[in-house]
Each structure stands twice: as C-alpha cells, then as structure tokens.
Amino acid sequence: MLDFNNFKENLEVLGEDIFSKKFLLAVSGGADSMVLSHLFRFFDSAQNDKGLEFQVAHVNYHFRGEDSNLDQKIVEDFCRKNKIKFHLKDVSEEEKTQMKSLQNWARELRYDFFFKILEQENLDYIVTAHHLNDELETFFINLSRGSGIKGLSGIPKNENSILRPLLKFTKAEIYAFAEENHIDFREDKSNEKNDYLRNKIRNQLTPKIVEIFPQFLEQFGESLSYLSSVNDFYQNEIEKTFQEILTEENEEGFTLNKEILFRKPKVLIIEIIRKLGFTGIEIEKIMNAENGKFFRSNTYEISIKRKEIVCTKRKK
Image 1 (cartoon, rainbow, N blue to C red):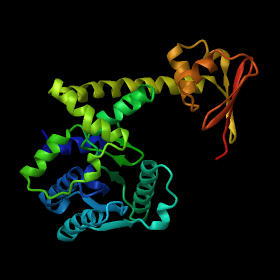
Image 2: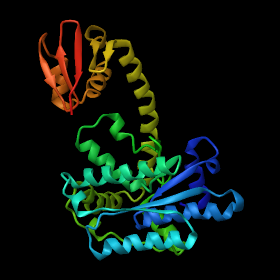
Image 3: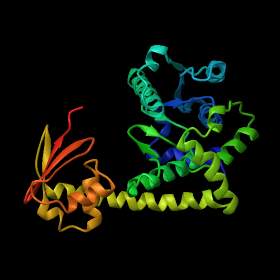
Image 4: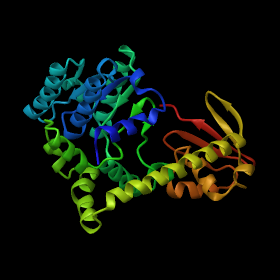
C-alpha cells in the first residue's frame, strides 16, 4: 500500500539524509506525477523547517492541442498554490522537425531539459514517477528484444542522478492514494491508443495477466527485486572479467585477450560481447569466428585476430 511512510522508505534508497538534498520533479499532470508531487509537498509541510527541497519541471509537447495546455495548467497551478519553482519546456514546431522516432526524441528532449535545470539550479536529483506497472511493461519489451539479465532486472531506482521512488507501487495503489487524498490529475487519452508496443502491453496484456493471476504484480515485484540483486552480482563479475582481458586501451578503442575470454563461462563471454553492441545470432557468430573476420555493431567495429579481439569505436 502506498502511504507517506512507505514512500519515505523508498526515497531513502540514497542511503543519506534526504532532507539535505535538492530535487527536481518531472511532472506531466498525470496521476503518477501529481501523486509524487503531493508526497514531496507533504514532507515539505510536515517537516516544518526541514522539508524536502524541490522544484518542478514540465514539458508541453503540444501534441494533444488544448489537452496539452490543460496538463500544463494543472501542474503550474499546483506550483503556484504551493510556492514551488516551476520550469516549463514549451516545445516549438521547429524542434518537432528534428523528430525521427517519436518516443526516443521526446525522451531525449525532456531529459536534456531536466539535466540543464539540475545544473543551472544546483540541484542533486531528478525524480520521476515510474511505478511497478511501468516495470512490467519494460520487462516484456526487453524480453521481446532478447535483452540480457540487466534488461530484465528492472528500472534502476537510483542511477545517473535519477531517482524513481514509486517503483514498488502499482498503478492501482497510486490511483487509490490520489482518490483518498483528493489529488487532482489529468488522464492522457493517448495512452488508451495501441499505437505503440508499450501501450499494447499496458492495455491488452497486463489486464489479461492480472485477470488470470490477481496477485501477479505484487509477486512480480518480489521476483524483480531478486533479479536486481542477481544482476548486481552478475555485473560485478562481468566488469572483473572485462578488466582481466583488457590488454590495451586508447581514445579510439581497446583490445581484448581472446584466449582468456574464450576460456570463461559462456554466459560471461556473451555478456562481454553484448557490451560491444551485439545481440542474438551475431554473438554466436563472433564466438565461432575464424581469424580475420570482421563485425560491426552500432557502437563498435571489431576484428577477430588469432589471440585478440580489436575493438574500434564507431564515429557518430
């Protein structure tokens, strides 16, 4: 159940005094981020002279006409009422002409905006309202793409100055909290469309799973926690192996000791090659490649030598 105490425990993944830090909340106007805003606001008022210091950022892409403006208004009104500093990214038509993949472009644009504010305002963390249902959608997307254990172990709670303190809570718990605490929010009707894989999982697959297994999300959360712990150990072993086989490194790339690498367990070999941007059948081809073979991923060009693998960074 989502409540103020549970939220505080999840925010404390920092392992330090959260009241000494300054946060930037990414707020869209939807239930998730408006609940997040009220949770932060509660500690601001409840702690009196020692509340959580935070500001709010909102991106208006103008994709949904007046609905986009109403999303902005609900966030702006919340900030004005509670005297919270508000930052707006008002996306121009010119910026939209740079769009190729909508979701990737939108994500890159908003995080560029968030990190600029972080630097300008001397803040410590960006906070997003990702929740357990987002975890499930990401799990299935990564599963369909053949991701390794890192891709299946969940969205990081704390990575690259981004905190996600609602990951343990379901969408239903967030809605219940919003209703109980009379929190206003807006629904993004575009989420009801099945134009994207994530929306199809959200609207078609997840309801079916929960219908069959009513406790699925809670049990999935427990499994994800275990996978995350395994992944921490696993990534540490991968890094140790990588440092062991690294023989030369410069600005253009690096060289790996093929003989030592190929004596390692297969699972470590696969993950080292995956780090070079290769997936699936490409990894198998590299593992069985003869001397002189050449391979190219989006990030590296590699040459297979008798005793070495020469890895050169691809120019963007």
